[in-house]
Image (cartoon, rainbow, N blue to C red; front, top):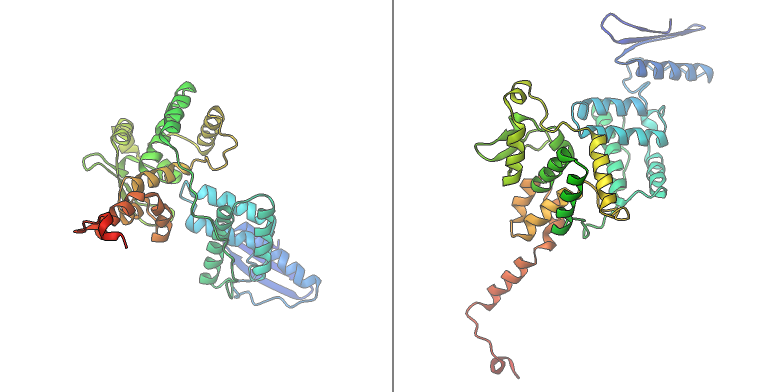
Length: 346
């Protein structure tokens, strides 16, 4: 038997053919199958089998992505989106590509494929980010000799879709008509806190401090812990959900699935006659929170901390919305000056 499971639940590959022998223990059946295929390829083409101590031997694109998912996303709700994105990338890149064969051209082929299928610049960069995360892990673990160059797509940061007050009122009316009360509460929390979808879905009683009026996010997309103040309606929504049972069981406060949230949003968008508005997506609720904070005079550094942006450059995309700051600034130049037509005329 060339592949078998050991007593320690690992997998061992024993490849023997015509005096050629290879033996190695790996963590998963997927890795073992890939190793066996690579050994067979070397045998068929009369190539020497690499040293079994070589950590990159048998490491393929699918295994690399699997290891990346296990390390970074396995225990997070928002990680589901990243894992789905991994699968789409592997469908184009190929699942059995040796990791050291993943080069600039192969990555560019992936990007061009999604670009031809209508992916936006932002979506293309998210694909790049998933690939980059896997490659970084490969380099750190010694599976990849050198990380190939990735070409990031320049995005138009000037435009961000956010919800105006009339649209918000219509949203709540539509959700009430559809009796989507849980989804309505979820969307209200997103628009008032700026939380990412995964952060809100993973919210538990221990994360909500009713006494000090804040939500503590301990596990986020970029591993930055932060605290978010609660508006009155968010506090009412979460206080109602926090029970003795939820504290004991440490259960999630929002009993919603990804599919249920997606269906509620799509149905609501249809009822609002916004199907043609491709920017009206769930993430625009986060943009709405950021936009309102900036428009109402909150300092950009505070908004950065509120949203959990790792770089101030991410937050500066909203800075142009605060025209009042510019109007206030002109008073500095007008101080102690009593200009009139006589003093400015030539």
